[in-house]
Each structure stands twice: as C-alpha cells, then as structure tokens.
Image (tube, rainbow, N blue to C red; front, side):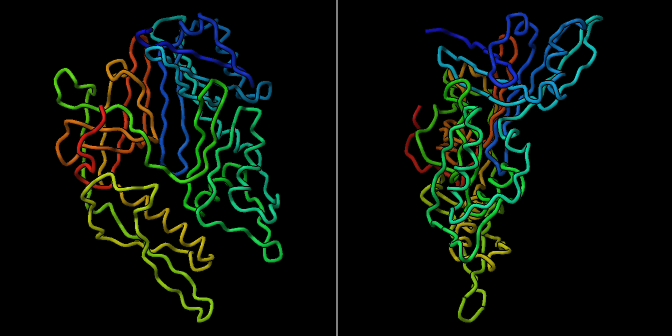
Length: 377
C-alpha cells in the first residue's frame, strides 16, 4: 500500500486537466474549507510562488475577464492509496503580492464550489405549476449536468403540492437563492459535495442527516493511540431553545401556538443527558402558511437549536490515517465521560503544504454522556 499523501491539481475553463509538474512545483499551500451550516459553501485557496515572467499569472488572471468566464479547479488528495476529491469549484478572486526575494511573486487563487455557477443568472418569473418543492429543485439542477452535477433530492415527509387553480409558484432570483429558499421552507439543507470521482458532484437537497456509519475515532490523551494534536470541548446550557410556531385555525381565524420537539429520526440524541430548554423563541410568519409548511419549518428550527456541546480540534492526517470528512459522525475517546461518544462533524478545514497535511475541525452534539457503551475504533 502506498504511504503518505499525493495531491492532484486539475485546472481548465470547463473540463479541467492535470496541470504540468512545473505548476505543482510552484504550489506552496492549499486550503479547503467545508462547512455544514445554513447556506454554507465550500471554499479553497491556492498559493503559488512564481517568477514575474511566468505565464501562469496571465492564465489565472484572465478568468476575471470576458475571455475565460469560468476557470474550474479540482483538487484530489490520495492518502495511503485512497483518493478523495476535496474540491470542485471555480475561481472567484486572484491577487498577486511581491515575494520574499526579487523576481518572484506570490499568486493567490481563491474560489468556491460549483454553487457559484448557480448564482450567475437571474431566472425570476419561471413558473412551476403543480410542482412540489422537490420537483422544482430537481428540474433546476438539470441545467448543471454539464458540470457533472448529479441531483440527490429527498422528498419531503409532508408533501405539499400547489393546486394550479389556487396558485402557481414562480422562481424568484437566481437558481442558488431559490433552492435555498425552498430548502428553508421545508426544513432542508442544500450543498454540493464533490466526488466520488473527479469531475462528478452530488447536489444534495434534503434533511440534515446525523446518522450513519461513524468515522474512525479521535483519540485524546491515549499515549501511542493518540491521533489528534488538540481537542477541547465546551457546554452551553443556554444554547437550546424550544421553537413555538403559530398555526391559523381556519374556522375561528385564531392562531394556535404549538411547541415543536427537537428529536426526529434524522436527528437522534447523540448525548444521553440533553440540556434543559430554558428559552423559547417564536417562529414568525408561520400563521400565513399551511399547517404542513408550518410544521416543517418548526422541525427545522428545533433541530438547529439543540447542539449545546461543541468541540474544536486539529489533527495530522498521516497520523489519523485518513481524511476526516464534514457532515458525518465521528467517535471521540479519551475526552472524559461527559464528552466521549459520537459527535457530528460540523466543519473541516484542510491545510496542505509540502510534506504536511493537517486539518482543523468543529464538532457538535445535542447532549452530554455517550449513548453508546463503546465507540468504534
């Protein structure tokens, strides 16, 4: 088995191709950030040390003009023989700064994932008669099959199909903004996940899932088995709040307050002792919606206000043995009875330099004390 890690950089206007070895030799650092928050997009930053006469500066800077409207960048990292696509995005910003020695400059390339392509054109006014939210999202995402985007749309638990005789939904804004609006209405999230192969992407529109097979455990203060450089936790007892929405009674036209629970099949308790809900917050605007839409929004608000436990840490990928991925579960061992167990990986930042691959990450959980007797290694 191959040991260590290997970076593959692919760049091109529409179909990226592997860059020459000279370009890789000029690459000094790579930074990729993946976040699972609301309307969170993944971003990347590349830094090159180039001579002032290098043609690479001109190639990247042209992406900001009309000659090459989009320059696509794909980053693939192979760790111990297993390849992973870290980023598939487009360049949004370029800058050049003087280098440490005369005759050389530092070229910095910044960009975001393919959600940037979905925000280029305003399609306001397009009608979608008799189409629920999931059907509208699937139809919108077909425009981006050219970029290797494959839709993964999860139907809503409570389906809401608009009757054409009553109303015909129409798009407002660009595709990305409209997809975000539809996701918020039904309590869903939307993001574009690169891979599994270079040039392919999965556009996920569905509930934020906090179940599944956990990643290998993060070990803290376990001597030779320690695989993290740092890991600290905090508990905020006031972070949890109960959302209360109002549903309009059609007979009496009186709004009825309804508290929404925070536990759903897709958001199970990862902690045995959940924090007490000391606060309540009122969800505005639900009285104007149908009961189906109001309940969906309430469930989404409830699931986002339960994570009272948060953790921040850093690790060396070569010591950990694989890449820690966001939007998945991971086990924690050695942090103490209160914080051991499964956690949800909220965000991950990859920092790659020559001979060095490190990650910083953020974990969240909705309670103290593990619900499992042991955590998978």
